[in-house]
Image 1: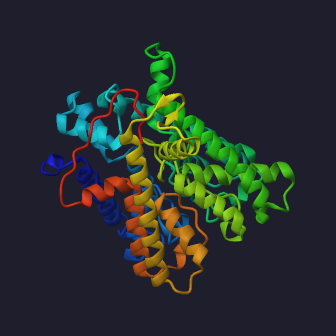
Image 2 (image 1 turned 90 degrees about the vertical axis):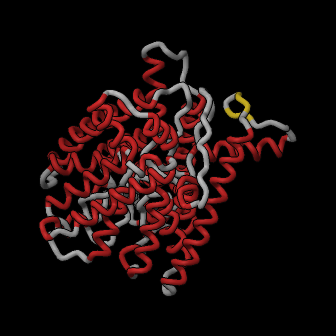
Length: 435
């Protein structure tokens, strides 16, 4: 009970750490391994699954037994739903109420405004997650069966959960490169990933709108949808124009794969349909920018977050136009939102610089662009890789584990949890932008 009395940031930190250590213990069992897996690699896979990153140092499909794959899938589900969601939903199922400490921690974990109750939000999250994942598993199982994939039902379920939780784990050693010409599979994965990455706040907003409790989508949901569409749209166009790895494809297949890779980076799902190691410098830079921004608050993805980007762009536009206030979707932003977005960006860039410095020092033979790409992919819990992760030494793997862990908890939350002094979590007013 002592951990529940800690401030919400430390509660989340300790909760995710417990999941990772428990997963490490289970994946280290001989029962979980098809071939011998080093302890550091078992820890890495556990951290990657809980953080829903998808970076791997061993191939999960061949290194782990069916039991090990089930453990990985459970860790992905726990990480995707979130520490507070799982524990609080179990408490709700048993007692039908949340205590004030859990309610406060849940509100802090998801950035809930005052107008949305934590209990209603948690029920909506779990029911929506299970419904979407089961629907995705059904569709993918049928597609895999038609294409002769072994164990299509298990593959459909595993990849549906991995996609919705934006985890990027795949039972195929080449991710989805073998399906680069298959729009049905790539679009199904994209739909699952986007639904997971836009955030559960939108789910609640849509429900309120459907039952007539709201005339339109909330402010945060409007910002998320607009920013997400622009990011994926522009990312697709730029990747289509700059990537030489897809140059041999006909234009519609090239556009399909450009969309899939832009979507994969933006939602932080981390699947790839083309070899990332063969991607050109300009296209890599596009992916890095999309990974830095990442998904949306209260979703399954990582990154700097779409709403924070919208605030920073609004700030730039305000300065260029000489206006004293900052507006998004016709609404004026409070100074606390601006300060929080600026602090998030500064913290992210500072940690990225430190990560690149340390990884570059530990891996002096690695290319600079590969070090930057891998660091950003780990920090934003994406999972795309240029191949560096598999060749890292033990010290480098530990650095990446810390980056994935910080990315799942949230960088400001991670910093607050490690601070010597507690920091109160301010309440958010209904309709205020969530970052």
